[in-house]
Image (cartoon, rainbow, N blue to C red; front, side, top):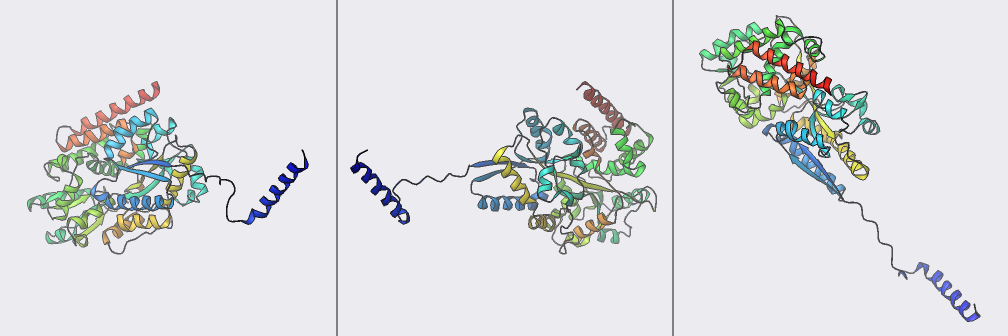
Amino acid sequence: MNRSIRGLLVCTALSLLMCSGCNFELLPAREKVAEEKITLTFRHFWVGKHDEPVERIIADTIKKFEEKHPHIKIDFEGLDQTIHREQKLKSEMVTGRPPDIFSLFGGAEIEPYVQTGRLLDLTGFLKDEDLYGRFKDLSLWTFDQKVYGIPFEGNAEPLFYNKELFTKLRISPPQTISDLMSIIPVLTHHGIIPFALGNKQEWPAAIYVHYFMDRQTGSGKFTQIINGRASFTNPEYLLAMKNFDRLVKMGAFPHNANQLSSEEAVELFTQGKAAMYLSGNWDITLFQKAAPGFSTQIGVLSFPTLQEGDEGSLAGGYTVGLGLSSALTGSKREAALEFIAEIYKPEVRAKITEEAYRIPVMSGEVQKVEKDSVFNQVIALTEASKTKFVPYDNMLPPEIKQVFLHSIAGIVDQQVTPEESLERLEQSLNNYRKLIQNR
């Protein structure tokens, strides 16, 4: 290399070094790598009127999350609970293409999804977020010591009654099943429907049946049946079904109960046309909407016991939750978990309790709401109940659950006898066991 060229190169290098602090760039700057655009699908079943506060709270949480993470979009879709759980999600699980995030029920319903590897194992996530030990009960979501779903809300199924109506008719709230049967004629004599029941979705009537069954034997019997150590066709359950059938024959329910929705049943109760309403805490949101001020007239009881002085169990638990698809990987999986962590932050959980009247699922959450005495009564009843049991329809595999609900609806319409209902359940259980063995 001759001296002139070498000198030119040296000068050029010196010039570049001298200009290192200049405000202009001699070479094009490297373009910044844009964050990967991510879209998550989230299907829920908070579509009923009583679910409006929950849907609003989660939608607001999504909006704030998207503002904080502009590269992430969450498609929030609501679908009727039965269609989501019994139809769409089932078929999606077969193909391995469920939504990224979805509402579901724990226990027997998710066991097939766990066995086929369709649900994301959330054990590590819960421990990393310091949430694992804070949940009151993860039993319905845990298989082989791994957690495959997160409880979203607790629930309790008490007996709501119209205090003013009971006082006016000079009848006392029923403490035993005998008490209950004795007040039915008094109410019907005065043109009052004893129980507001809207059984269009079939599960509301099942609440009566699982209470009658529980009062006869306790929930342990039902567990034995599911595990193959007992039969549905037993004398105690026959008596329970006959007690429910007796209520129907006595005119305890609206004549068209199987055609009425839960919202229509609430209207019967809040308008003073029905004296009692057996349902869950989730319907408290409907009481004020249907009849402002009516909440002050509502009393809350556990379902009547078999004998006076018996400790009656309360139906409820932590069955409703959220699951994630095991197909989530990489940055999409990280985004989904980060969003789930937002839902379980204290400020969001407080809104779920205070505005939607959902029972807390974690320790340290807000426990009572001063502005609504009905919810406080439910919380007090929940705390006072020494024993609780998971609603029986939530303990059943889907194949048997449908027979359970259809049979009870058949008794409401007086198309099925108590004996036939139990025989159908036993047959469906035997068929299910054969199916499992063949698999």
